[in-house]
Image (cartoon, rainbow, N blue to C red; front, side, top):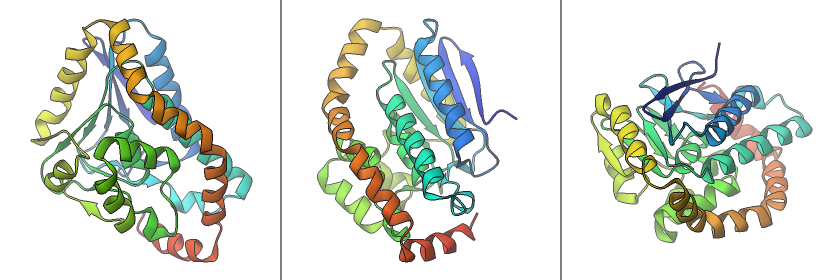
Length: 251
């Protein structure tokens, strides 16, 4: 089974997360997503990317905690570095990207959405947020830096400090999403958004986006190795293990 199903429409690559209902992230899933992003980057016939889930319940629940709890530190380091690399590849992709969110996008799933240029979410009970602090963990450093750029320092502080999940209307007020739409319109409107920008000058857009992400990218890359080590230290702490074990029961 393809964990990331790639479709193409009008020059837009539609990458559908397809790992069961909750789309929990594991290494194979991230490898496939990373490969899909790179193929979209290198394909001159692709003018934009839409990232979405294959169901209307979950965009992604984030890391596959039950699986990751059994990892050694070395194996978790490989997984975590892969996650951060995929996030950076998506964030710096020189083509317009839109997250079409028709289900919950929390923790690592929320970070994947934040790496896109735009986020369109379905109305109703679709939750977004970063609950890492409630698991004894820091927010992954790329996600933290990108969040600050997207919503600003004040809202980023609230989102990360509280670890709360937000419904679409609150997510819109916080700046986490750009539009709240009926579920049946989310994908089509996301494709239209990517297409409307993708038909413009590729070179001009590439430079505009480079200028937008350059400073944040440089900050992330400067500190990432140190921050990854600290994240792993937290993951293997006694308190985080207790909290993660409880969370794993919800998968």
